[in-house]
Image (cartoon, rainbow, N blue to C red; front, side, top):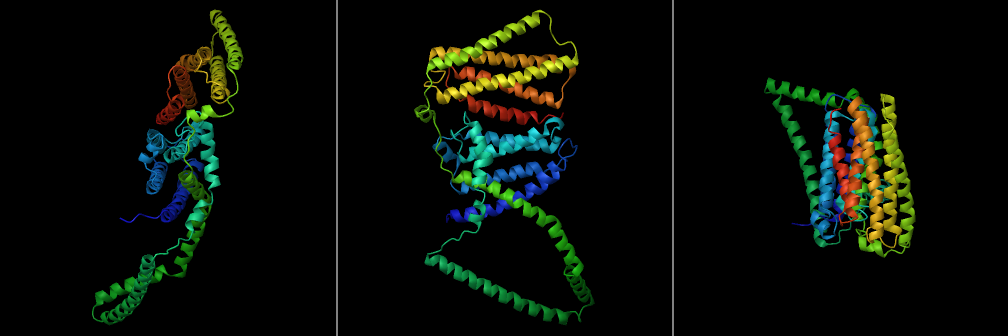
Amino acid sequence: MEKISEAKVYKFFAVISFVIGYFYLKHVLINDFFEGNYIGHEYIKWHVPFFAVLFIAFTEGFAYLMGNTYAKLKEAGSSVIEPAILIGCIIIQSVAACIYGLHDDWWFYQFCIWHFTIVYYVLSRMGVLVAGRSGIFFPLDAFRGMVVIPFSNFILSAQKLFARTSHTSVRSKVKKQIAKTDIGIIIVSVIIALVVCGYAFSQLIGVSETFAALGNGITNFMVNIISIDTISDLVYSFFDDFFCYFLFSIPVGCWLYGLVAGSLGMKKDSVTDEKLEKESYHRLPSYSAYIIIGSVCVLYAIFFVSAFVDVMSGSIAATAPQASREAVGSFWQLIRVVGLNMVIMFASCFFSKKALWVESGTRILATVLFVFALCFALLAAWNLVGVYIAVYGITPRRILSSWVVVNVISWCILILIRLYKKIPAAQIGILFAAVTFSLTVCGNF
């Protein structure tokens, strides 16, 4: 079997990208999301899952024909499980949007996360995540997938679509000459056939009245098709509907093609733990960790002592507004505190001479730090679920907040495990967040 040239593959998928872009703009973005049909609707629409399946097939087919198979990903050290998990998340989120629509209070987050899951799947499938898999470079991967790769390859579809391919072999020239000859013969044959059939038709209508009536019906039908009114209606419909959407879908197709084709053509050189350790910016000594983390831990300890005093003195929420304020306040405390702890851990991976989990002293200090973070998470979970939701019921916004709390608790536990055992904690945490969010949107609330 003759191998398809890369130029033809790029051209074919460049055309397909514009078709997908047109479908996305007209049916998914405009008709469903922007017109509000997907926010709290009570009927099924198939556009979102159809686009998801279409784009996944587009990405998988493009990668496969260009030789970027799952076996190649495995040989390069990239994760082959991640793309499969992300495909499942995309399908689940799309089907949930099809059945239940977007949830009223957090439809914007659901809309953005659905798009981001698709983008992150492309990066994972093409093996161009910075570390070869999800990890501490997640923010950088997100920025590259949403901005750098698609926009830096924005005109790639036009370049590939209109690129000229050279045919230097004698065999290819002979094939082109034969093809031109065949086309000429076909055109001449069709013209002769029309003339012969026209003459035969003019003779046969005088023989059979039924045949004549059939001929007149066909003639009237053709006349109606090519009539001025019909043509004007078609032209108006073309420019008012199709052409307008197609014109604005061109940038969408360019963005989609730039994301997939740009990721496919990138150099796949991941940053391993060994490479990260060799970088020159690892300069901070261990005592800097004692100063920074120790100070934060003392502050956290003072807070929990004061919180314990509040509980012992009976300062608890007695009314719904008070419970609401405490739940919301502790939730944002959780986000800020755990975010701060994550930044400290992230910075240690880049700037400390040795990671926090290497030396026993810094490992113990990091353990104390994330035990405090876990306590903050459990406190927020108690205020949100144990006090507020248990007494005053659930809403979509409270369910989303609960999802965030559950993920933060799981991330704290994963980091505590990582301090004592080498596991891909960041990858597990990111995939856990993707899977749990996909399952959360399946609820009809």
